[in-house]
Image 1 (cartoon, one colour):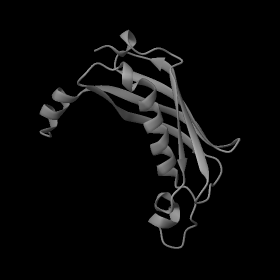
Image 2 (cartoon, helix red, strand yellow; image 1 turned 45 degrees about the vertical axis):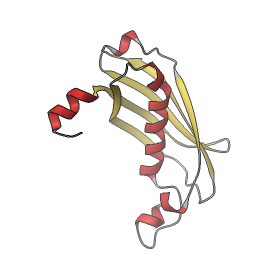
Image 3 (cartoon, one colour; image 1 turned 135 degrees about the horizontal axis):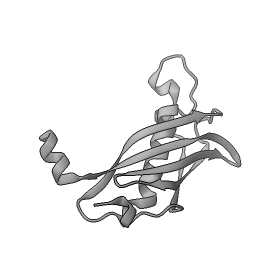
Length: 131
């Protein structure tokens, strides 16, 4: 499968999350503040990117995260509503590139770029002996 045949620049998606205690730095590291953890923000960016293109993939195909270049700009407390956006900015044969951002209200709390690689689940599973 060639991503250029099914994915177009400009495709986008959005997710919203109310920050739970178990996704804070303080949950993972004793003594740290109970604010949205950077890896959890990046997870939302990856999931939102997948959402933007999932319905265009052929059966048996998925995408997996391959690159992240993210800045976490502002802390968000437990209970904050965080909105994450992802937009396709480039499509290669097996790689889809996204511009991503997260917001708490109108304030941007994170931004950057993410890439996802196109993977055939059956071939991948055989290669790694999973499934």
